[in-house]
Image 1 (tube, rainbow, N blue to C red):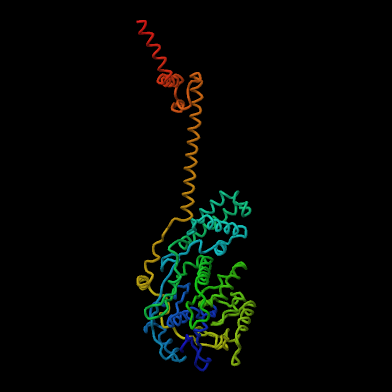
Image 2: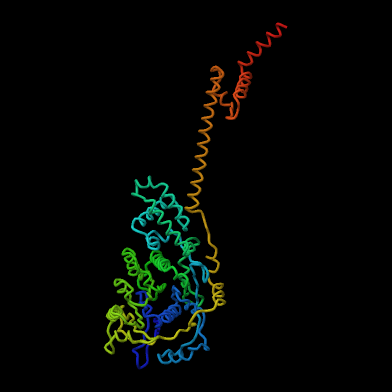
Length: 515
């Protein structure tokens, strides 16, 4: 199917063949269904189709299964006969096995190239969401970011932000005149949340070298789009970090890519697995931000596909923008489930051949209810579809194969070594050291001046007022000197002066004259 990604269909129990039109692939999409109904395989064949069409893909591998995209399927695989039979049934004549160009990424740097961004690039809104800050705490975070800009303090990693918050706390009295009250308790709460993030491994996310977005939009020598796979099995242990990172990545793509209108095919397709994590407990300001990005990013040539168990997980305003839909089976055991099933069915253009709600409930594993955008972006009639089998390996690859893929990656070595350049932490540290040194020097000068004043006063008392300030300054009367020692030093000093020489000449002259 030219200009399409073949999804499946065909056979007496199904409708017409279903395909995703590349021209409308940037109109976003939804893959939904209960656990174990085939969402991962659908994601895999869509990634294969986009890659074959020269479209780079970014997706998260929550279960560890999608690494199989880097290896070809095998004829000795236990499902080989079933896959071959399904391909024949749906009219997929040229079905065969092949591997696809894959780049592995990992926030923790264990199963892929490290992924980093800076604290400044993440911004106060997403950081506040990540740390679940209150409104007052988020306000202080915004003050800190403003000061970082004004004072020329680069915020690259967590220690930069921690140092800046300490500086804000120490100067809160002066800053309060410009920005309002700054509570020490709120600063302490933010510092504790930063410590929690460190314990979750977020310190590996923040730093340099930061991710270059162009590295996500590469093609191989054959013109196939590279499939960027983020290892997310461990990352799911910190679900808010997972959701915030993907939202940051989406926002960065939106802000950095130029307008392209409606291209013949997307520049990049972004799959957001476990999408409900993005919206659970999210403040309205953040949901509005996601809606804005989803609405406008398609003009940048980026398609966003949300993968979740239930369409009800997606806010209605965002769900309405998802034109391409693959709905696997939904189970309705409770009143809430039945309501969600009914609402899901109502979002499709009806097909007179079957009842949509019943079809969503009844489709088996590897089947789905689909609706793709047609000419002029009009939603197609809902169809029951037998999903095509994948060409790449079903299931994860072994560690040896993963290491080979990493070694042959076009970004091998670029992100492996972290860099720690001069930033807010070092600047504030140097300022503090400079201020301490200046204070010590000022204190030493004051002490020296005080000692000189005491010496001068003592000298004048013991010399009858004949000691000048310059001669007194040259005297050093130590605190542990005895009175006699001090006086001896003073007398010897005076004897070496002009007055002293006159006295000596007089005494000696008298002695010699008398003699």
